[in-house]
Length: 112
Length: 114
Image 1 (cartoon, rainbow over the protein chains, first blue to last red):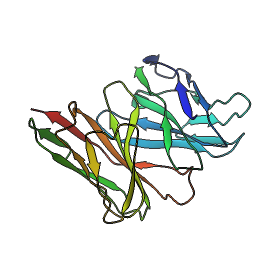
Image 2: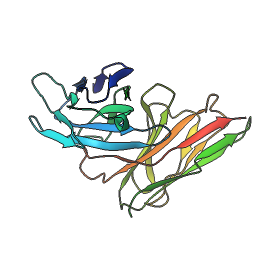
Image 3: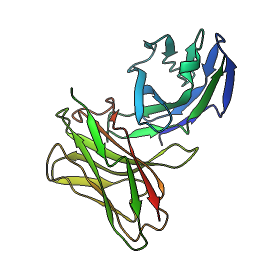
Image 4: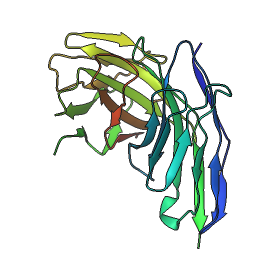
């Protein structure tokens, strides 16, 4: 079946620290992979995505590379800011059925 | 601006009452989805619709109902059969033609039980 396993939080970092949030997946076929961000009390916003192996998605200083050999899509940022404090969700979507499979989310708090 | 709107932002339900959550999109997307989010948890799929006048149950459809009479609209009714309705409800849409596509989310409705 299809599933996403995401690093458990919460994660607390100091401003300008390096961020990694791990995400691994199980999927039938060749999924598209996504990272979404959710700020308190709001809906999910697309952060970045990758649609095939070795693709790198990037946005607002965040990056993630689609690694088929390790079935991973880890989120990284070189220098986090207080405004990055949010919950981050890894997700996959397979070509058939058009459904999404979400991880449980990782809460990030960045302190000044 | 194109996007997804959900209303109301907060909704209160009394015992035994049905309530309806609104979801409208002007993105010309074929597919629409309803998710439930509980505190500290991920998203669980309630219902989805790939085309007008058609919809399918997701993982937790019991106690909920939907309709898809128009492409732009996908309202969710939380019925009295849903015994634990307190949650954050998120509506999403995608182009829906090929699969594997990005889903775009509305701002959510928080449902509380009085």
